[in-house]
Length: 582
Image 1: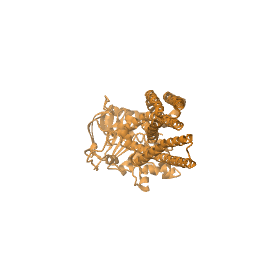
Image 2: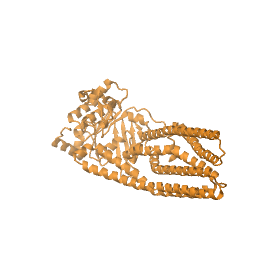
Image 3: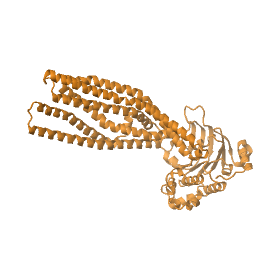
């Protein structure tokens, strides 16, 4: 787990190593200063100190202090650089890994969980890393030097640490044992909280439309209070660290003062002198403070261990879909073949979402797909672009198994306008050029005219330079669909798939868009998933999907004659009227 995350350090290794060196220098100097101070105090007691010795010792102490401060300051600079850079690399690596995931990998983690891992978890790991390269290096070094000097100078007095240190370590282990389960629960609840926020923001119109604001606020408050309760429980346990540390510090001070004073008085300074006892107090405080620092690191690592595990899960996740060796990088035409295809979303699923699909679509054909909700229309077309891999059988494009193609080549030649249309923050031009980064302004206008988007774009004050807000909230559903269709047309693909992508436009506009396809991309295979018969009745082939199978296929007239499902849908829509969508 730690090895996985450590790989993200990369170019910041030198900054991390410099931090360790600076911290080591600071620790050595801080361990030397009490020794020099003790020698100066002893010389005062013996009346054998000369002024020049005091000045010389003072200058040495001043110089050591300046060097210690410089080392500490430089360590702060390099540790901040290393920790921030490390977090940047972790964030980059997770995002890059997610970009390679198949839909099945995304489904495994969920969107909200990935957001939590990219934000809260990485922040925890960044803080833990900074503490690790600073305090986790400084504290052990200071402990080693301070304990060594304490035993060297204090003799029997150093026996206090034999009692204090094991007590402190045992207390920390007990605290971590009881606190860790609460921290584990918190991160899972963070995922659910983020999921609730994401759902609420995306569905804000529905929430307001049904006046469910109070319900959503209550649901959010309950989730937030649940997280607060777990954090409070964990923090209460962790807070016991403070009292345990204070007890150890005061016990140490009392032991040194009482026992040390007794030794000095009874042995008349032959066993231990005043300077050595004062240095013992200093070293004792240093030892316990460093133990406190180590306890803070222990608590932070206890908290961040779960974050590290969750980050490692993403970094170690192998994409279910990847490029094959010697991948095919050319697609001749838009011929599509399904041969004995069955598919389920998970290997553990008992039921196939698609089963026994056999289908041949010639290049340049227009194919319509109708079917009820849950009939796996979208699942069928997602196999063409290899958004999922088939469970059984083979999907071929241009006579070649889609699993043999280079993924970029395949997806550049299969343009999909999905059911949930997405526009990104930026201008209309920038959104359109997702389809073709090299498209000229004339190309953009031509594609928008074919998608029946040009007129409404021109009606905006800034035209094609109009800014699209996040999620496309400043354009209507129909406008968003037409812009997404124009974006797909700019790819000039071999295969164009519209997954219920004209549901928000009226029938006249829908017909104009389909007519534009025939003129602009006659050789492109066009697959149109729709709820309206009018959207597909002119198609060369119409598929009727039912319960994950192709119930019937043929032309409009053929299906009216032989398919009860198609005939029923057609009669309902023509008899009941097919009103224009808003």
